[in-house]
Image 1 (cartoon, rainbow, N blue to C red):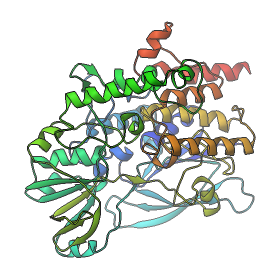
Image 2 (image 1 turned 90 degrees about the horizontal axis):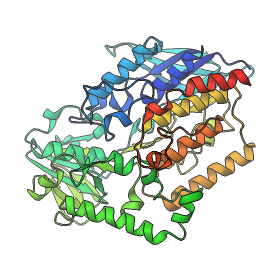
Image 3 (image 1 turned 60 degrees about the vertical axis):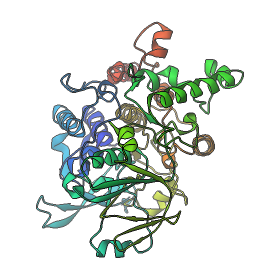
Image 4 (image 1 turned 180 degrees about the vertical axis):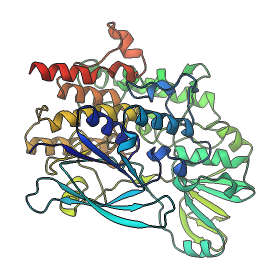
Length: 500
């Protein structure tokens, strides 16, 4: 069938770039966003105080729309949101967004299953009136995000804690710093949001305790105070020290005969971090080696985090939570903590609750693992794509190239393997990730630390050459990710399609 009407669910990074890519090629695009503003994880109501990006500025921009040069090297969450709004206005996406529109059901069109019926619950800005509307589309792009559903674990007697006046929040809902002023705060987790919030609370709360099951390696913005992290982690060279499931060339040598070199490379990096930060003195040395934890769980160390730990302004406790009680919580080691506010920095769940169940079961298995070919489509779910489930070290770039790939798929320009082969490829990659990358998995939605590998595969699928900044191979190996290198992808595809 001819595809003309396209639905995009979500107006975060992935939704905006998907809408832009399809709009530029003449498709009728409608974007549904349940919040009253765009930005996804960067949207103001979802941003905790002090939120900033982990990437240096230029590695997080879209290929054809650089961030303002006035932005600092690590922009704040507010600046990222302003950049995304500017992007949406510049490319005509803003007027295609319906805000306060929560998608509650997506099912195949009953008559001839030629498209999708999308049911939307719409609220005005006052949140007083809610009406349900029904739309029909030829193609649906799901961009509800890998960080859209807060994960708050359940514990016995949490209701007793709340009824006694205690507050329980997810990091996603902590957007008012006054909530913790002079309070006894417990932050749960050790990822980016948990340590960011603990560092924020250290100078504002009465006391701050960080409860975590496993310490993670924290990365400085500048290694040894000198080398920007983008030269250490966001290069093809750095990526090659992780064994990809398809080994070729130099990497094949490195991860077979050269394994001692790989071992030494990661031990050197660990030693540098232990020299730069008082990791051992603070009792925060991770149980797992750095190469096992590099992935979507790795994060920049917040400003003064280790200083606050040494000063006991942050009290780290490695333990599980057993239960809550009136006025606090009990840990698995038997220790009791008094608390006024508990903030869970425990990440997010991945799900597509609005999708018709017979199709949802193809995408999510019984364990909640995501089955998508190239992290973009499922061969048994027709006329639907998924952008944002290809989360990488340069998330905006993997989403952008993923959107171009999806456009070529819609046009029939992607030469796909058989259905059976695609399903087998998905299974093989998932099994490999679970075995080799269990601590950097994100239910199958995380392609980090293989950003370059992933983007190269999408480019090859589209019949395009791998993009490089220089004609000198060593320079390309060592230089950090540069989204602007990919700004001609649309023109390349247009030229290619015109010839064919």
